[in-house]
Image (cartoon, rainbow, N blue to C red; front, side, top):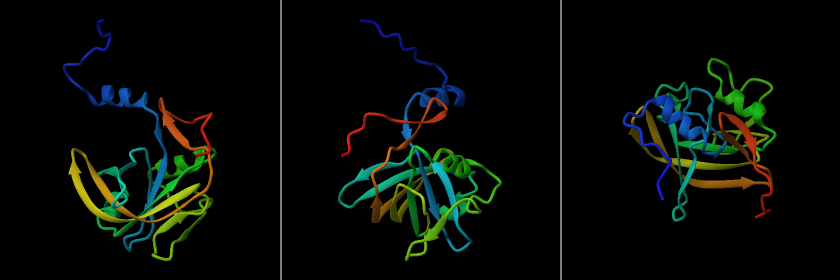
Length: 170
């Protein structure tokens, strides 16, 4: 059997982006405050990397407006989005606006990090490591607090927000 997949000799950013647009990924908003006011950004790079201890990772461009705060923040919050929260995902993916201004509803956890009040759940984590990787940094955080409710997750696929159906209630 022969493969119909072409192996490129040169991987351009556009080609790389096009391949990953075909990969569905969950959508979250990562928030933090390093003492300069709240920051947040929409991410699809969240990964669970360890159970003991509970660790997650996400990637952020070093050119992103949130990077200076994430680079020094001690804690982060990963806010899980419901399928109906596309507007919130768009808001935190938009540059040059106050993402925390109305209509965004948010508050602070007892530890001080900002969290989105309408999030379907969250993970609060203590940043353990930051690794420069290409034009991004990979951030690793140990999870110290969790809250969740049943929801249909927001996903990103083919350049657009979507949802999944026929999920178990697991």
